[in-house]
Length: 281
Ligand code: AMP
Image (cartoon, rainbow, N blue to C red; front, side):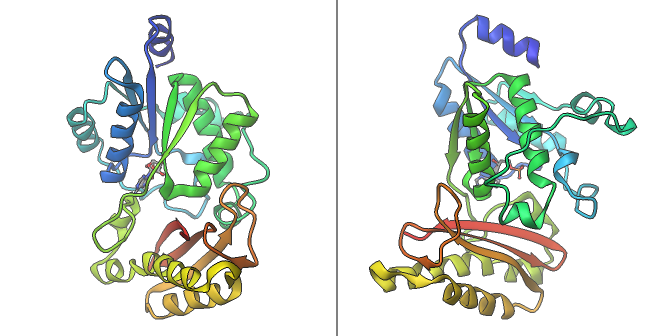
């Protein structure tokens, strides 16, 4: 991959990159189309499919994460993707099975809250694998989804702090007609759980309504939190992991929430952990 990328660079071709864990859905495809737009007609689009083991905790769903590489390759072909990069664990983490992989990339500020506090080793895995993929693919532009809002903020920070010569584009969340954000993990949901999974979107919508109605003074974060807790409590198979209201750039938590703030939440629906977020416009 890196040899190919260096050759493209020598030819002066522009490369757009979409990192994924596969089991592609319309959300991923929207990022691929965005990457194509960003690099233009003479550019190249690279998609990586890699279920990165180091971003899963020991009790998480690494072993059952959904996979269908044949289907993913067909979708990529239909989208006109130029290269699909499918690295192996052995090539990405040489020596890790013997305990002698030892270099990590760690962001220390934006990773403290939300996904970072619920999943303590998650972002170390994300920043490390994305840094490695950037070194292998050498893209001009990389496209991430707003669905993983904190992840996009962390990647932007890593790129800034470590001087990666890469432009980061964040594309909007693609949703089902009832508001559920598309996710490979939605495949885990039973029909009953799928019905309850709209609670994340309903919570965002209700927070939006309340913040709009409140005007310039905003609403106390505690009031919004209790509203979300009540919505989630109304779903028999759902359990709130966290909900946060924060400043969209710094991710600093807010005590009072007015228009322009951002919210993010994680909810267990049965054995499936779902996340979502939205700007309170
Ligand atoms: P994943 O395969 O889940 O690691 O996601 C790969 C990329 O797709 C990440 O940048 C995600 O934020 C993005 N993504 C996942 N779901 C969606 C969605 N529903 N809409 C837009 N982007 C998404």
